[in-house]
Length: 550
Image 1 (tube, rainbow, N blue to C red):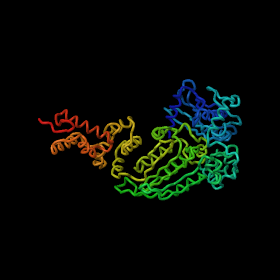
Image 2: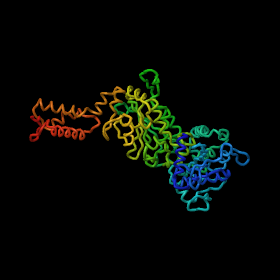
Image 3: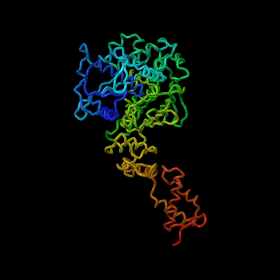
Image 4: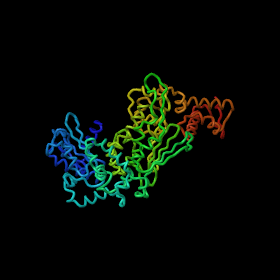
């Protein structure tokens, strides 16, 4: 986490200048100044379609150099001797879940305020909303065009739209009670206050409703099943399907709003069987869940948060008896590259359902810094299970989780190989599954002696194959050298006297590496035969091939 935040600071100081979502300060001036800037940066981040705004102390605002600051937010007091953070939180409306991070960068004290973009209404401080204009903080009311643009930015979020005729009576009381418990878990400092709030107050503070009005988010997370008509034609539904290893459907069940409660119902429905390792020393535990509970909840919560409900499709979970679990939701994957999320631990800069995502953060249903997907990969790695498979085609997101070791010897030996980063393991996992990897990953794996072959037909190296008792699989994937295949051609012609090209192709097709498709295999056979002809081993007579006489 600390390394991520330090890298984030370096990225921000490399911005060409301060922005409507980014401000640098060298030292602390007053609590009021910070409050105004939190308001301005939250509103500015929304305008810029950013997930967060940032206020950084310890950086000059001219050259953007890291110089350090004497400001310590843990000891600094506000008016009335109140703790600074609590004083700020209670004077912002709506109360946004900003974070304060204290970092040591090259021996210099740096304070980073991580401020979520507003989604339902402009954020105000002491009853005044602010905005960034150039490098200055100004009152929003003095810039009506920016105010209009801000409201337009928020109104395009489907999850923030108001259900005009819906009331609190259309929400599930049990779901609201559960939401209170989750909110307290997320905000323990408010544990004594939450029970004193009525439902309307609580839902406003949890950012599920807007000024007491029922949003699409409120119906999706907390609505009674019969209240789903308020979001028509959108669909808020989860379908679980059980299939045999042969793909034949054996059971299914639909789950409706409130989806906050449906998460637990779906979790209970999934047959999370125990997986038993073949023990060898103490490397592996004797028994584990096929699917880590965190992975199930994270994958399902992500599907709810990022579903494009306007596409009128259901969220689906397909459980197959071959030990796989596949989650699917509709809508494009906005970060575009799964590698950015997993390997760089890069938080998403924008969301399809910003209001819904923020509400789910407040209710502790999803992670706040985009690290949930990366953690899913790490948990699979810890059990030596295959990495999650993401398919982002056809305007939907599909992730398949495998709940078993595909090759126990390979997993055991691979675990013993030194200095394998998560990046290396993910890339090698892709090679094992015969998927494409990028040139940078291929180069690194090749330098470490983990793969061989030519792009795009990489395979595990002979060294890894030997260490993992996969010599047979290695030969099937990599194939034998050219001399072996030339010998087969020569022996065929020696025995039968002559052959047509199609006959020699038939001889070798099923003996060439599995990573090659049929056209690639035919090209290789043609190249082998031409090489033998150039070397004076065989010759052509019309459409037949024969051994060349010496």
